[in-house]
Image (cartoon, rainbow, N blue to C red; front, side, top):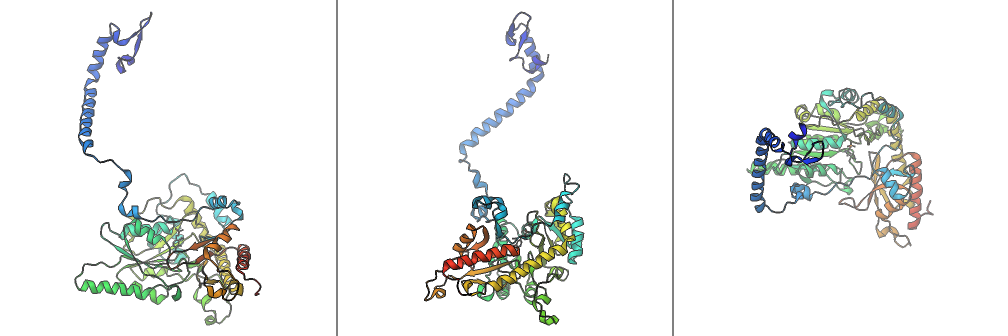
Length: 487
Ligand code: PMP
C-alpha cells in the first residue's frame, strides 16, 4: 500500500510471475486515481506556487543587473584599512625556522613570565565548562570591586578591553549622523579601527615627540571652544562624542597629569581613559622617592596610580583596565571597565550575553588571588625598564634614543642622522634593518614607520635573561654600524 500511495508511477509490483511497471498493471489506473484524489490538492497548490514564482522570476530577472555580493558591504568598510595584529607564536616560529621556545617575544607587551601555575590549575579544574558562562561575571565583578574600590554595580567585564572599546562606540555613535570622536595619535590603533567599524569620524589631535608625546590637552580644548563658538553663531555642529585618553600611552608610555585629565572631564563629552598598562606606572612614592624620605628608586609593590575611582566623581568618565598585560592573560581575553551609572543599563542591554568565557572568568578570579606574585613580576619588568635606560646610555648605543616610559615597553627612536657618523666610517642606523637583524636572531620587537613614529621601535620588557640576550644582539648590531670599542 505504502509503495502505491507514495510513488505509484515509478514502482513495480511483483505479480508472482514477472515484474510489470505499475503504470501498465490492470490495477494501476485505479491506484493512481486514488493516489491523485488524496494528493492532488497539495500537489497542485505546490505547482501553482512554483508557476507563480517562475513567472515572477522571469519578469524581474530580465530587469536585474548582474549581482555582486561584495556590493553589500558597507561603503565605509570597503574603504577601511585592516588592523595589523601580531602573528601567533607558532606561525612566527615557523616563519623563522625556529622552535617557539627559542623566540624572545618583545613585540606585544605581554607578560614574559607566562600564566602563573595556580591560574593554569584553576582553569584546568573549572567544573562547568560545558555550561554557558555567567553573563554578568558576578563573582569576578565582586572580586574586582574589592581590587579597585569601585562597586561591582559600576563594573562591566569584557572579552578583553578591546570588546569594551567597541561596545562604547556602539552605544554612543549614531548611524548617518557624522558623529566624531577625538583621538590623540600616535596611540593604540583600536580607537581608529573601531571608529571606522562604527562609521564615526575621527578628529586626530597629534602628540609630538619633542613634547614627550604629552596628551595635547590645550589643542583638544581649543577644538571644543571652536565648536562652542560656531554653535553660538547658530551653526549646527555637534561636539565630539568621545575623547580617548590612553594612560600610560601605547606606544610611548607617557602619562596624562591629574590636572590635564580634570580639564578634559569638564568638556561636554565622554572621556574614555584607557589604563591597560597602569599597573606598570610608578606610584607617587616611586616617582619622587626623596619626597617620602628615602633615596631608593627600585620598583616596589604598591597600588598603581589608577584613576578608576574617579568614575565615582565624574559622570562622563569611563576607565578601562585589562588582565592581558600584568596578569599574563592576553590569550584568555579578559578586560573590564568602570562606567557612569547612567550608561550601565544600556551597556548591559547591548553587550553579547556570554562575552566572557568560563576559562577567562576563572583565570581572572584566580589572578586576583595571585596578585602578590603577579605584582612581583610587574616590579621585575619595571626593574628591566630601568636597566634598559642605563644600558642605552653607553656610547655604542648613541644611535638609539629611548623615550621615558611608565609602562612595560620602551619606545626608541633609531637615530639615522649623518651627524652621528660625522668624520667616522660609521654606518647610518636604520630601524627597519635593526628589526630584521634582531628577528634573524630570534628576537621580536615592534617596528613603526607610520606618521609621528618614523624610525621608531618599541621593546617590551622581557625576563632578565631575555633582556641580556637583547643587549648582546644590540651590541652586535652596534659593531656592524662601526661602534664597539668605546666602553
Ligand atoms: N588598550 C591599550 C592601550 C592596549 O595597548 C591594548 C592591547 N594592546 C588594549 C587596550 C587591549 O587590551 P585587551 O587585551 O584587554 O583587549
